[in-house]
Length: 201
Length: 201
DNA sequence: CCGGTATGATACCGATCGGTATCATAGCAC
DNA sequence: GTGCTATGATACCGATCGGTATCATACCGG
View 1: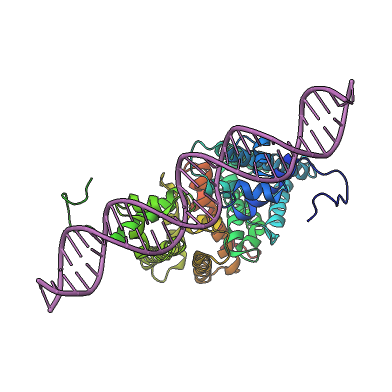
View 2: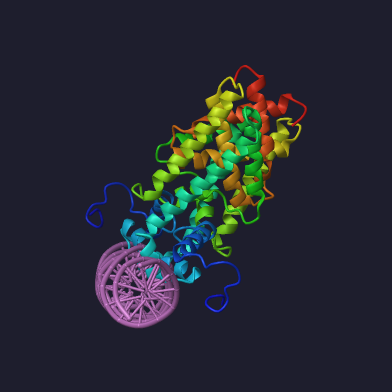
């Protein structure tokens, strides 16, 4: 209903942007396979043809979406890290507070990357490497912070924290925001302290 | 090719069984939405009509599959628990060793329930309540064991362990069996000990 | 005014989706 | 035998899938 006559504020974004944003929203909320290109185009006040003028295929659109998600994710991460320079321990803490905040959002439906990994089983899908690279980088970054925090077995601690992060996201889907996902920050804190204070894993 | 003339060992299972088993396998390996009823029927050496004679709809078949999964899951759990009667601490340990074993299987593609929760976004889908009930029960059972183990904040510890379990399953999908999923058992051990020995969470 | 660029509209393609109707046959119980 | 049950085979349904071709229009810089 807000198409041609009403242009309340600023320029109308390009068809590409509208389509991309609509796709991102629908993919996350409804799932990748559950959303057809026609639905995306209609939701963006465009047409299927408009979609295929900006993206070579639905699979590529999916991959593009996840690439964008990856970029935004690390932007947030770096912003957070920059608030605690030279203090990896605090960065770890802040990362989990950030995750806790995201997971507490009632609109949350888990991690877009992990969800995509569940839905996409074709091993040649262009999104696969985006997902794997993203998660590998997350693992590595956690390990960095664990090293900096002086953990005795930093890679091990990093993997434990990684499991908590992934678990919180999926728990938010199955048991909601008031479920176990709520406890992810204290869980991380307990794990970190255990690793820092004791000598044996 | 092994239909009428060859009957190598025992009776041929009923069409229902063959269809159900094929569906279970395909749903888990390829995903629910990625598998059509025709594909299932063909894989079971039956036909689409044969499928609809045994199951009212694909959605019901999915729900049935998850109900079966739930039953088998708790059978395994109880068997494990019965090996350590009156020792909840050991049961906790055994549960995580069981999970670790499952997650180390290269064919593993996470938790069928959680994956289904990711794929199924319709809130009226018959599988939804199966999933939620299953996960709620898992959470409760973990809490029981944490109480029995003498944890100071048993529900909190249970939730932390829950996160680890879910995280390990999804981590097996994104980063494979040699990724962080491998560390789930030691992570649980660290968490449990931290909760039992210290007085503050 | 001219010409490119971006966009919408519509019709179409073959394939597949979930689901159904109909007919035939094979086995088993009585 | 006569049924009844289980199963297979096939054809069909309307809807939707991802993807394309074509035509028209609106805008914008020269």
